[in-house]
Structures are given as C-alpha cells and as structure tokens.
Length: 232
Ligand code: SF4
Image (tube, rainbow, N blue to C red; front, side, top):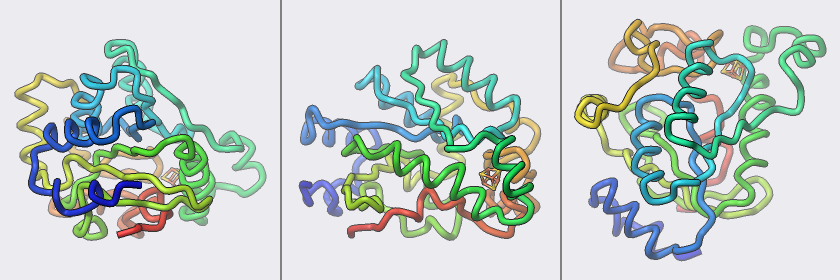
C-alpha cells in the first residue's frame, strides 16, 4: 500500500484531479464503487465510469429499497451500461423475517449488519480502491472524513477508500447534477434528502442534518462506513 496516496497531498485537489492522480499512481489496481444511486453516488459514478467504464458498481441489495430506487437503478444501469453488482445478504427478506422477525423495528443495527455490513465486507475483498459518494457535510459522524483513507477489512485486507466529494456541499452536488443534466432519484422531489431502505428512510425534520431522516433519527450510520478500521 503506497502511503503517499493516503496522505494529505491530494486533499486540496478537485475531484477529477484526485481521480486522475490516483489512477496514474495505481494503474491496474482493482477498483470498485459502492452506489446507492443517491445524487452524490451518481456524480462519482459519472466521473469514474468515464475513466473505468466497466468498474464494478456495488449496490447493497437489502431487499428493502423503495420501488423507485429499484426502477432508477435498473434504468441507469441500462442507460450507462453499468457493471452492476447486486450485493445480497445470506438470507432473503422472507428467511430473515421468519427467523428473527422484523429486525428493522426490533434491532436495526443487527438488520444492517446482516443485510449491509457483512455482505459488503465480503464484496470488497477483491479490491484495492473503493470509491464512495460520502461527504463531510452529510452527518456529524462524517465531519472528519478524508478524501483518501486507508482502511482495513475485518479479514486484515487493506484498501484505499476514496471519497472524491468529501468537501462538497449539498449545493455543489445539485449544481453539478443540474449542469451535467444528470437524472436523480425521484424521492428527492418529495423532500427526502438521504435515501436508503424504505422502512428506515423518512423526510428529515432537520434539513441541516439530512441523515436525521434515517432510522427515525435513532442512529446515523448503518455501519458500512464504520465497520472497517481506519489506518490513518
Ligand atoms: S437500513 Fe433498515 S431495512 Fe435496511 S438493512 Fe438497515 S435496518 Fe434493515
């Protein structure tokens, strides 16, 4: 792992500049992108796919997404010829509910662990570069996010987690989306600001904290961005 890439050297560069620098420095490196098809993810996906058209696009297929999300995912996968990888949990929704009941009500952390965290860390194993659409402004839990962080998976495998839009504001996201005529999830037009599984997503009461609409404000992270150990 080249530590220089995980340093502050690239922090002040634009998203496209960081991406280009990374791809030159890590030519041939296996890269993937996690994508929930939210506005930030579509910007990162747009930037990355121009350079790596067949990059695996990992979608955490929990089985609990909005119908609109599935329709948008499928429409964009076709339109952009994406290499879509649906990352599925060990159990179907029916199997899990039959064994444990409605975990998103009784124990949402366990539900996220089974349907998101465990499947994701297995799915990330083959890669050295992991692109995300995370931004510092999204949540207090993300305020210290760096654009490039070295992470260690539970298996010990290390990879670079790259958040090209870490310093972007919500305004910048929409300015880019509009300027580049990117389509977006229809739920935004209904007032949603952070969109995940349907049972755990609501229109936020506090617009200054978009993720306050997730899990009724009871928690802010599903765990996929906190399960791995940050190297620096
Ligand atoms: S966000 Fe909700 S439904 Fe989705 S995996 Fe987590 S607890 Fe389950």
